[in-house]
Length: 383
Ligand SMILES: *[C@@H]1O[C@H](CO)[C@@H](O)[C@H](O)[C@H]1NC(C)=O
Ligand SMILES: *[C@@H]1O[C@H](CO)[C@@H](O)[C@H](O)[C@H]1NC(C)=O
Ligand SMILES: *[C@@H]1O[C@H](CO)[C@@H](O)[C@H](O)[C@H]1NC(C)=O
Ligand SMILES: *[C@@H]1O[C@H](CO)[C@@H](O)[C@H](O)[C@H]1NC(C)=O
Ligand SMILES: *[C@@H]1O[C@H](CO)[C@@H](O)[C@H](O)[C@H]1NC(C)=O
Ligand SMILES: *[C@@H]1O[C@H](CO)[C@@H](O)[C@H](O)[C@H]1NC(C)=O
Ligand SMILES: *[C@@H]1O[C@H](CO)[C@@H](O)[C@H](O)[C@H]1NC(C)=O
Image (cartoon, rainbow, N blue to C red; front, side):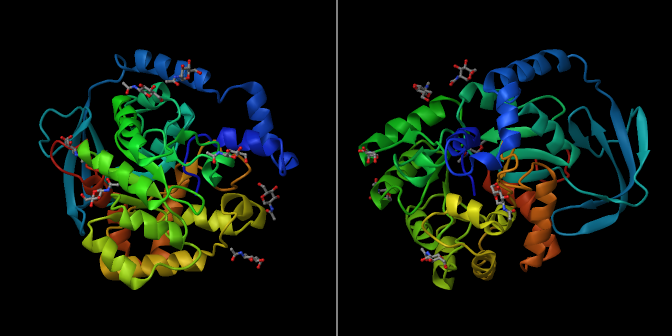
Protein backbone atom coordinates (compact mmCIF):
# COMPACT_ATOMS: atom_id res chain seq x y z
CA UNK A 1 0.00 0.00 0.00
CA UNK A 2 2.88 2.29 -0.71
CA UNK A 3 1.61 5.16 -2.67
CA UNK A 4 4.63 7.17 -3.60
CA UNK A 5 7.70 6.53 -5.61
CA UNK A 6 9.98 7.70 -2.86
CA UNK A 7 10.28 4.44 -1.05
CA UNK A 8 14.01 5.07 -0.89
CA UNK A 9 13.30 8.13 1.21
CA UNK A 10 11.08 6.02 3.39
CA UNK A 11 13.70 3.40 3.75
CA UNK A 12 16.40 5.96 4.34
CA UNK A 13 14.23 7.18 7.17
CA UNK A 14 13.75 3.66 8.43
CA UNK A 15 17.43 2.85 8.20
CA UNK A 16 18.07 5.44 10.85
CA UNK A 17 15.37 4.04 13.10
CA UNK A 18 13.75 0.79 14.04
CA UNK A 19 14.38 -1.63 11.20
CA UNK A 20 17.88 -0.55 10.32
CA UNK A 21 19.38 -3.99 10.56
CA UNK A 22 16.60 -5.53 8.46
CA UNK A 23 17.45 -3.80 5.23
CA UNK A 24 20.94 -4.77 4.14
CA UNK A 25 20.15 -5.03 0.44
CA UNK A 26 18.73 -1.53 0.37
CA UNK A 27 21.82 -0.18 2.04
CA UNK A 28 23.96 -1.95 -0.52
CA UNK A 29 21.95 -0.40 -3.35
CA UNK A 30 22.37 3.05 -1.89
CA UNK A 31 26.08 2.50 -1.80
CA UNK A 32 26.35 1.67 -5.50
CA UNK A 33 24.09 4.58 -6.49
CA UNK A 34 22.87 2.53 -9.46
CA UNK A 35 19.28 3.28 -8.53
CA UNK A 36 19.73 7.03 -8.24
CA UNK A 37 17.54 9.33 -10.30
CA UNK A 38 20.58 10.75 -12.03
CA UNK A 39 21.84 7.33 -13.16
CA UNK A 40 18.39 6.23 -14.28
CA UNK A 41 17.87 9.43 -16.26
CA UNK A 42 21.13 8.86 -18.11
CA UNK A 43 20.18 5.25 -18.90
CA UNK A 44 16.73 6.23 -20.17
CA UNK A 45 18.01 9.13 -22.26
CA UNK A 46 20.74 7.00 -23.82
CA UNK A 47 18.24 4.26 -24.61
CA UNK A 48 15.79 6.65 -26.31
CA UNK A 49 18.60 8.02 -28.49
CA UNK A 50 19.94 4.61 -29.48
CA UNK A 51 16.78 2.57 -30.09
CA UNK A 52 14.64 4.98 -32.11
CA UNK A 53 16.51 4.28 -35.34
CA UNK A 54 17.31 0.62 -34.75
CA UNK A 55 13.90 -0.99 -34.15
CA UNK A 56 13.09 -2.67 -37.49
CA UNK A 57 9.69 -2.04 -39.06
CA UNK A 58 8.69 -5.61 -39.98
CA UNK A 59 5.23 -6.96 -40.53
CA UNK A 60 4.64 -10.31 -38.79
CA UNK A 61 1.64 -12.61 -39.12
CA UNK A 62 0.43 -14.70 -36.17
CA UNK A 63 -1.52 -17.67 -37.50
CA UNK A 64 -3.91 -19.96 -35.65
CA UNK A 65 -4.51 -17.78 -32.59
CA UNK A 66 -7.69 -17.56 -30.49
CA UNK A 67 -8.27 -13.90 -29.70
CA UNK A 68 -9.65 -12.71 -26.35
CA UNK A 69 -11.99 -9.92 -27.44
CA UNK A 70 -12.86 -8.62 -24.00
CA UNK A 71 -15.76 -11.05 -23.53
CA UNK A 72 -14.80 -14.45 -24.90
CA UNK A 73 -12.05 -16.39 -26.59
CA UNK A 74 -12.67 -16.73 -30.34
CA UNK A 75 -12.13 -19.44 -32.93
CA UNK A 76 -8.60 -19.80 -34.32
CA UNK A 77 -7.75 -16.96 -36.72
CA UNK A 78 -4.83 -15.00 -38.21
CA UNK A 79 -3.70 -11.49 -37.36
CA UNK A 80 -0.64 -9.33 -38.07
CA UNK A 81 1.60 -6.92 -36.20
CA UNK A 82 2.80 -4.09 -38.42
CA UNK A 83 5.34 -1.81 -36.74
CA UNK A 84 3.66 -0.79 -33.49
CA UNK A 85 0.11 -1.62 -34.65
CA UNK A 86 -2.25 -4.58 -34.83
CA UNK A 87 -3.85 -5.23 -38.23
CA UNK A 88 -6.10 -7.79 -39.85
CA UNK A 89 -4.60 -6.90 -43.25
CA UNK A 90 -2.20 -9.78 -43.79
CA UNK A 91 -0.67 -8.59 -47.07
CA UNK A 92 3.07 -8.00 -47.49
CA UNK A 93 4.15 -9.64 -44.26
CA UNK A 94 7.78 -10.66 -43.84
CA UNK A 95 7.45 -13.27 -41.08
CA UNK A 96 4.90 -15.80 -39.91
CA UNK A 97 4.60 -17.24 -36.40
CA UNK A 98 2.39 -20.30 -35.82
CA UNK A 99 0.28 -19.61 -32.75
CA UNK A 100 -0.64 -23.31 -32.54
CA UNK A 101 -4.17 -22.59 -31.37
CA UNK A 102 -3.01 -20.62 -28.35
CA UNK A 103 -4.95 -17.74 -26.79
CA UNK A 104 -3.88 -14.24 -27.81
CA UNK A 105 -4.36 -11.61 -25.10
CA UNK A 106 -3.95 -7.87 -25.49
CA UNK A 107 -0.97 -6.37 -23.63
CA UNK A 108 -1.82 -6.33 -19.92
CA UNK A 109 -2.25 -3.10 -17.95
CA UNK A 110 -1.03 -2.71 -14.35
CA UNK A 111 -3.16 0.12 -12.97
CA UNK A 112 -1.07 0.83 -9.87
CA UNK A 113 2.70 0.66 -9.79
CA UNK A 114 5.69 2.67 -8.51
CA UNK A 115 8.62 2.96 -10.88
CA UNK A 116 12.05 4.43 -10.51
CA UNK A 117 14.29 2.06 -12.49
CA UNK A 118 14.62 1.53 -16.23
CA UNK A 119 15.20 -2.19 -15.64
CA UNK A 120 11.61 -2.42 -14.36
CA UNK A 121 10.28 -1.59 -17.83
CA UNK A 122 12.26 -4.51 -19.25
CA UNK A 123 10.90 -6.84 -16.54
CA UNK A 124 7.34 -5.62 -17.04
CA UNK A 125 7.40 -6.18 -20.80
CA UNK A 126 8.79 -9.70 -20.28
CA UNK A 127 5.61 -10.51 -18.33
CA UNK A 128 3.33 -9.11 -21.03
CA UNK A 129 2.57 -5.90 -19.12
CA UNK A 130 2.66 -3.32 -21.90
CA UNK A 131 1.08 -0.38 -20.03
CA UNK A 132 1.55 0.74 -16.43
CA UNK A 133 0.01 3.50 -14.37
CA UNK A 134 2.81 5.03 -12.27
CA UNK A 135 0.91 6.17 -9.14
CA UNK A 136 3.18 8.94 -8.01
CA UNK A 137 6.03 11.06 -9.28
CA UNK A 138 8.90 12.70 -7.44
CA UNK A 139 10.95 13.80 -10.41
CA UNK A 140 8.99 14.98 -13.43
CA UNK A 141 11.98 14.61 -15.76
CA UNK A 142 12.36 10.94 -14.79
CA UNK A 143 8.61 10.26 -15.16
CA UNK A 144 8.61 11.81 -18.63
CA UNK A 145 11.56 9.60 -19.63
CA UNK A 146 9.63 6.46 -18.59
CA UNK A 147 6.62 7.41 -20.68
CA UNK A 148 7.36 5.99 -24.13
CA UNK A 149 10.55 3.98 -24.42
CA UNK A 150 10.48 2.21 -27.81
CA UNK A 151 9.87 -1.52 -27.37
CA UNK A 152 9.18 -1.32 -23.63
CA UNK A 153 6.16 -0.91 -21.37
CA UNK A 154 4.65 2.54 -21.72
CA UNK A 155 3.92 4.50 -18.59
CA UNK A 156 1.24 7.03 -17.61
CA UNK A 157 2.20 9.12 -14.62
CA UNK A 158 0.48 10.64 -11.62
CA UNK A 159 1.97 13.88 -10.41
CA UNK A 160 3.57 14.36 -7.05
CA UNK A 161 1.03 13.04 -4.52
CA UNK A 162 -0.83 15.63 -2.45
CA UNK A 163 -0.38 14.86 1.23
CA UNK A 164 -0.86 16.46 4.63
CA UNK A 165 2.36 17.43 6.37
CA UNK A 166 3.06 15.31 9.47
CA UNK A 167 0.75 12.54 8.27
CA UNK A 168 1.94 8.92 8.05
CA UNK A 169 2.69 9.30 4.35
CA UNK A 170 4.75 12.40 5.05
CA UNK A 171 6.66 11.16 8.07
CA UNK A 172 7.08 7.47 7.26
CA UNK A 173 7.07 7.46 3.47
CA UNK A 174 8.72 10.81 2.83
CA UNK A 175 5.89 12.29 0.73
CA UNK A 176 6.28 16.05 0.53
CA UNK A 177 3.60 17.38 -1.81
CA UNK A 178 2.09 19.33 1.06
CA UNK A 179 -1.24 21.07 0.81
CA UNK A 180 -2.31 22.88 3.97
CA UNK A 181 -5.56 24.61 3.02
CA UNK A 182 -8.32 24.33 0.39
CA UNK A 183 -7.15 27.61 -1.13
CA UNK A 184 -3.85 25.96 -2.17
CA UNK A 185 -5.58 23.21 -4.11
CA UNK A 186 -5.87 24.84 -7.50
CA UNK A 187 -2.23 25.98 -7.47
CA UNK A 188 -1.03 22.52 -6.51
CA UNK A 189 -3.14 20.85 -9.19
CA UNK A 190 -1.94 23.37 -11.80
CA UNK A 191 1.69 22.43 -11.02
CA UNK A 192 0.91 18.72 -11.30
CA UNK A 193 -0.56 19.12 -14.78
CA UNK A 194 1.85 21.89 -15.76
CA UNK A 195 4.59 19.28 -15.37
CA UNK A 196 2.97 16.87 -17.84
CA UNK A 197 1.22 14.49 -15.41
CA UNK A 198 -1.59 12.34 -16.74
CA UNK A 199 -3.70 12.36 -13.57
CA UNK A 200 -3.73 13.64 -10.02
CA UNK A 201 -2.89 11.55 -6.94
CA UNK A 202 -3.95 12.32 -3.38
CA UNK A 203 -3.71 10.54 -0.08
CA UNK A 204 -6.59 9.87 2.29
CA UNK A 205 -5.36 8.57 5.65
CA UNK A 206 -6.41 8.69 9.28
CA UNK A 207 -4.09 11.58 10.14
CA UNK A 208 -4.36 13.22 6.70
CA UNK A 209 -6.45 15.91 5.03
CA UNK A 210 -9.92 16.87 6.20
CA UNK A 211 -12.84 16.56 3.81
CA UNK A 212 -12.47 20.21 2.73
CA UNK A 213 -8.99 19.78 1.24
CA UNK A 214 -9.94 16.51 -0.46
CA UNK A 215 -12.95 18.14 -2.07
CA UNK A 216 -10.96 21.17 -3.16
CA UNK A 217 -8.23 19.02 -4.76
CA UNK A 218 -10.72 16.82 -6.59
CA UNK A 219 -12.74 19.84 -7.73
CA UNK A 220 -9.60 21.61 -8.96
CA UNK A 221 -8.62 18.48 -10.90
CA UNK A 222 -12.04 18.23 -12.51
CA UNK A 223 -11.96 21.93 -13.32
CA UNK A 224 -8.92 21.13 -15.51
CA UNK A 225 -10.85 18.34 -17.27
CA UNK A 226 -8.65 15.73 -15.58
CA UNK A 227 -9.11 12.82 -13.19
CA UNK A 228 -7.88 12.09 -9.67
CA UNK A 229 -6.79 8.90 -7.92
CA UNK A 230 -7.07 8.64 -4.14
CA UNK A 231 -5.15 6.29 -1.87
CA UNK A 232 -7.37 4.92 0.92
CA UNK A 233 -6.77 1.64 2.72
CA UNK A 234 -9.01 1.89 5.77
CA UNK A 235 -12.74 2.41 6.24
CA UNK A 236 -12.67 5.97 7.61
CA UNK A 237 -10.32 7.17 4.86
CA UNK A 238 -12.54 5.52 2.27
CA UNK A 239 -15.59 7.41 3.51
CA UNK A 240 -13.75 10.67 2.88
CA UNK A 241 -12.42 9.58 -0.52
CA UNK A 242 -15.85 8.42 -1.70
CA UNK A 243 -17.48 11.67 -0.55
CA UNK A 244 -14.88 13.74 -2.43
CA UNK A 245 -16.04 12.10 -5.68
CA UNK A 246 -12.50 11.30 -6.68
CA UNK A 247 -12.42 9.21 -9.86
CA UNK A 248 -10.28 6.21 -8.95
CA UNK A 249 -10.16 4.72 -5.45
CA UNK A 250 -6.81 2.99 -4.90
CA UNK A 251 -6.90 -0.06 -2.54
CA UNK A 252 -9.98 -1.15 -0.55
CA UNK A 253 -10.63 -0.93 3.21
CA UNK A 254 -8.57 -3.61 4.93
CA UNK A 255 -9.62 -2.86 8.52
CA UNK A 256 -13.43 -2.67 8.54
CA UNK A 257 -15.00 -3.88 5.29
CA UNK A 258 -16.79 -1.47 3.02
CA UNK A 259 -20.54 -1.55 3.59
CA UNK A 260 -22.86 -2.57 0.78
CA UNK A 261 -24.40 0.89 0.94
CA UNK A 262 -21.00 2.53 0.32
CA UNK A 263 -20.36 0.17 -2.59
CA UNK A 264 -23.66 1.22 -4.20
CA UNK A 265 -22.76 4.87 -3.69
CA UNK A 266 -19.38 4.32 -5.40
CA UNK A 267 -21.23 2.79 -8.34
CA UNK A 268 -23.82 5.59 -8.48
CA UNK A 269 -21.08 8.23 -8.45
CA UNK A 270 -19.28 6.62 -11.38
CA UNK A 271 -16.08 5.89 -9.43
CA UNK A 272 -13.84 2.88 -10.02
CA UNK A 273 -11.65 0.81 -7.67
CA UNK A 274 -8.17 -0.75 -7.93
CA UNK A 275 -8.11 -3.15 -4.93
CA UNK A 276 -4.36 -4.11 -4.92
CA UNK A 277 -4.77 -7.44 -3.14
CA UNK A 278 -1.16 -8.57 -3.54
CA UNK A 279 0.35 -5.74 -1.55
CA UNK A 280 -2.28 -6.26 1.14
CA UNK A 281 -1.33 -9.92 1.36
CA UNK A 282 2.33 -8.95 1.73
CA UNK A 283 1.59 -6.26 4.31
CA UNK A 284 -0.61 -8.30 6.61
CA UNK A 285 1.78 -11.25 6.55
CA UNK A 286 4.38 -9.33 8.56
CA UNK A 287 3.41 -7.45 11.74
CA UNK A 288 6.50 -5.22 11.60
CA UNK A 289 5.66 -4.12 8.10
CA UNK A 290 1.96 -3.70 8.91
CA UNK A 291 2.71 -1.53 11.95
CA UNK A 292 4.87 0.77 9.82
CA UNK A 293 2.46 1.03 6.90
CA UNK A 294 -0.69 1.24 8.98
CA UNK A 295 0.09 2.49 12.48
CA UNK A 296 -3.51 3.44 13.28
CA UNK A 297 -5.58 0.53 12.00
CA UNK A 298 -5.20 -3.23 12.12
CA UNK A 299 -5.51 -4.65 8.65
CA UNK A 300 -6.70 -8.09 7.55
CA UNK A 301 -6.73 -9.60 4.09
CA UNK A 302 -10.24 -10.96 4.71
CA UNK A 303 -11.65 -7.46 5.24
CA UNK A 304 -10.28 -6.54 1.82
CA UNK A 305 -11.88 -9.59 0.19
CA UNK A 306 -15.22 -8.74 1.82
CA UNK A 307 -14.87 -5.14 0.60
CA UNK A 308 -14.19 -6.41 -2.92
CA UNK A 309 -17.18 -8.76 -2.88
CA UNK A 310 -19.49 -5.85 -1.99
CA UNK A 311 -18.03 -3.75 -4.81
CA UNK A 312 -18.59 -6.62 -7.24
CA UNK A 313 -22.17 -7.04 -6.04
CA UNK A 314 -22.77 -3.33 -6.63
CA UNK A 315 -21.28 -3.54 -10.14
CA UNK A 316 -18.36 -1.18 -9.48
CA UNK A 317 -15.62 -1.33 -12.18
CA UNK A 318 -12.60 -3.21 -10.80
CA UNK A 319 -9.08 -2.64 -12.16
CA UNK A 320 -6.08 -4.89 -11.60
CA UNK A 321 -3.16 -3.08 -9.97
CA UNK A 322 -0.29 -4.39 -7.91
CA UNK A 323 1.32 -1.49 -6.04
CA UNK A 324 4.61 -3.10 -7.05
CA UNK A 325 7.54 -0.89 -6.07
CA UNK A 326 10.93 -1.37 -7.63
CA UNK A 327 12.70 0.08 -4.60
CA UNK A 328 10.87 -2.06 -2.05
CA UNK A 329 13.82 -4.42 -1.80
CA UNK A 330 13.60 -6.80 1.11
CA UNK A 331 11.31 -4.52 3.11
CA UNK A 332 8.22 -5.61 1.19
CA UNK A 333 9.20 -9.12 0.26
CA UNK A 334 7.45 -10.18 -2.97
CA UNK A 335 6.45 -6.66 -4.08
CA UNK A 336 8.25 -6.99 -7.42
CA UNK A 337 7.16 -5.65 -10.80
CA UNK A 338 5.79 -7.78 -13.65
CA UNK A 339 5.08 -11.17 -12.10
CA UNK A 340 2.94 -9.53 -9.42
CA UNK A 341 0.28 -8.59 -11.97
CA UNK A 342 -0.20 -12.29 -12.68
CA UNK A 343 -0.37 -12.92 -8.92
CA UNK A 344 -2.93 -10.11 -8.61
CA UNK A 345 -5.09 -11.76 -11.30
CA UNK A 346 -4.98 -15.05 -9.39
CA UNK A 347 -5.89 -13.30 -6.13
CA UNK A 348 -8.82 -11.50 -7.76
CA UNK A 349 -10.06 -14.84 -9.07
CA UNK A 350 -9.73 -16.45 -5.63
CA UNK A 351 -11.57 -13.48 -4.13
CA UNK A 352 -14.61 -14.24 -6.25
CA UNK A 353 -14.24 -12.48 -9.60
CA UNK A 354 -15.02 -14.57 -12.67
CA UNK A 355 -12.06 -15.40 -14.88
CA UNK A 356 -13.35 -13.28 -17.74
CA UNK A 357 -13.84 -10.30 -15.43
CA UNK A 358 -10.31 -10.72 -14.12
CA UNK A 359 -8.92 -10.62 -17.67
CA UNK A 360 -11.08 -7.57 -18.33
CA UNK A 361 -9.68 -5.93 -15.16
CA UNK A 362 -6.21 -5.92 -16.73
CA UNK A 363 -7.24 -5.02 -20.29
CA UNK A 364 -10.46 -3.36 -21.50
CA UNK A 365 -11.65 -2.02 -18.15
CA UNK A 366 -8.51 0.03 -17.28
CA UNK A 367 -8.25 1.15 -20.89
CA UNK A 368 -11.73 2.66 -20.59
CA UNK A 369 -11.44 4.11 -17.07
CA UNK A 370 -7.91 5.44 -17.49
CA UNK A 371 -8.93 6.92 -20.83
CA UNK A 372 -6.19 5.17 -22.80
CA UNK A 373 -6.29 5.06 -26.57
CA UNK A 374 -5.46 2.03 -28.80
CA UNK A 375 -4.96 -0.29 -25.80
CA UNK A 376 -6.60 -3.05 -23.80
CA UNK A 377 -8.04 -4.94 -26.74
CA UNK A 378 -7.00 -6.59 -30.01
CA UNK A 379 -8.41 -4.39 -32.75
CA UNK A 380 -7.35 -2.89 -36.05
CA UNK A 381 -4.85 -0.07 -35.45
CA UNK A 382 -4.42 -0.80 -31.75
CA UNK A 383 -0.96 -0.63 -30.21
C1 LIG B 1 15.43 15.08 -11.31
O1 LIG B 1 16.62 14.46 -10.89
C2 LIG B 1 17.79 14.96 -11.54
C3 LIG B 1 18.96 14.08 -11.13
O2 LIG B 1 19.05 13.97 -9.73
C4 LIG B 1 17.98 16.41 -11.13
O3 LIG B 1 19.11 16.93 -11.78
C5 LIG B 1 16.74 17.20 -11.57
O4 LIG B 1 16.85 18.52 -11.12
C6 LIG B 1 15.48 16.57 -11.01
N1 LIG B 1 14.36 17.23 -11.64
C7 LIG B 1 13.29 17.62 -11.00
C8 LIG B 1 12.22 18.26 -11.84
O5 LIG B 1 13.17 17.46 -9.79
C1 LIG C 1 4.63 18.83 12.41
O1 LIG C 1 5.21 18.25 13.57
C2 LIG C 1 6.24 19.03 14.13
C3 LIG C 1 6.91 18.23 15.23
O2 LIG C 1 6.01 17.38 15.87
C4 LIG C 1 5.64 20.34 14.61
O3 LIG C 1 6.66 21.15 15.17
C5 LIG C 1 4.99 21.06 13.46
O4 LIG C 1 4.33 22.20 13.90
C6 LIG C 1 3.99 20.15 12.75
N1 LIG C 1 3.52 20.82 11.55
C7 LIG C 1 2.25 20.86 11.22
C8 LIG C 1 1.92 21.57 9.93
O5 LIG C 1 1.37 20.32 11.86
C1 LIG D 1 6.38 21.88 -11.91
O1 LIG D 1 6.39 21.56 -10.55
C2 LIG D 1 7.21 22.38 -9.75
C3 LIG D 1 7.14 21.87 -8.32
O2 LIG D 1 7.32 20.49 -8.27
C4 LIG D 1 6.75 23.81 -9.81
O3 LIG D 1 7.64 24.63 -9.10
C5 LIG D 1 6.66 24.27 -11.26
O4 LIG D 1 6.08 25.54 -11.30
C6 LIG D 1 5.82 23.30 -12.06
N1 LIG D 1 5.84 23.69 -13.46
C7 LIG D 1 4.75 24.06 -14.12
C8 LIG D 1 4.94 24.45 -15.56
O5 LIG D 1 3.66 24.09 -13.60
C1 LIG E 1 -16.66 20.74 -4.96
O1 LIG E 1 -17.62 20.57 -6.00
C2 LIG E 1 -18.89 20.16 -5.51
C3 LIG E 1 -19.75 19.81 -6.72
O2 LIG E 1 -19.67 20.79 -7.69
C4 LIG E 1 -19.46 21.24 -4.65
O3 LIG E 1 -20.72 20.84 -4.13
C5 LIG E 1 -18.51 21.50 -3.47
O4 LIG E 1 -18.96 22.57 -2.71
C6 LIG E 1 -17.10 21.78 -3.97
N1 LIG E 1 -16.22 21.80 -2.81
C7 LIG E 1 -15.12 22.53 -2.72
C8 LIG E 1 -14.37 22.44 -1.42
O5 LIG E 1 -14.73 23.21 -3.64
C1 LIG F 1 -9.22 11.44 -22.54
O1 LIG F 1 -8.40 11.34 -23.69
C2 LIG F 1 -8.71 12.27 -24.69
C3 LIG F 1 -7.88 11.93 -25.92
O2 LIG F 1 -6.55 11.68 -25.56
C4 LIG F 1 -8.45 13.68 -24.15
O3 LIG F 1 -8.79 14.63 -25.12
C5 LIG F 1 -9.28 13.89 -22.88
O4 LIG F 1 -8.94 15.13 -22.30
C6 LIG F 1 -9.01 12.80 -21.88
N1 LIG F 1 -9.89 12.94 -20.73
C7 LIG F 1 -9.45 12.85 -19.48
C8 LIG F 1 -10.49 12.99 -18.42
O5 LIG F 1 -8.28 12.69 -19.18
C1 LIG G 1 -4.65 -3.53 16.86
O1 LIG G 1 -4.40 -4.77 17.48
C2 LIG G 1 -3.62 -4.67 18.65
C3 LIG G 1 -3.24 -6.08 19.13
O2 LIG G 1 -4.37 -6.91 19.05
C4 LIG G 1 -4.40 -3.89 19.71
O3 LIG G 1 -3.64 -3.74 20.88
C5 LIG G 1 -4.72 -2.50 19.13
O4 LIG G 1 -5.55 -1.80 20.03
C6 LIG G 1 -5.43 -2.62 17.79
N1 LIG G 1 -5.52 -1.28 17.19
C7 LIG G 1 -6.63 -0.79 16.66
C8 LIG G 1 -6.54 0.59 16.09
O5 LIG G 1 -7.68 -1.41 16.63
C1 LIG H 1 9.14 -8.65 8.58
O1 LIG H 1 9.65 -7.55 7.84
C2 LIG H 1 10.84 -7.02 8.39
C3 LIG H 1 11.17 -5.76 7.62
O2 LIG H 1 11.28 -6.00 6.24
C4 LIG H 1 11.92 -8.09 8.30
O3 LIG H 1 13.10 -7.61 8.86
C5 LIG H 1 11.47 -9.32 9.08
O4 LIG H 1 12.42 -10.35 8.92
C6 LIG H 1 10.13 -9.78 8.58
N1 LIG H 1 9.63 -10.84 9.47
C7 LIG H 1 9.26 -12.02 9.01
C8 LIG H 1 8.74 -12.99 10.03
O5 LIG H 1 9.30 -12.31 7.82
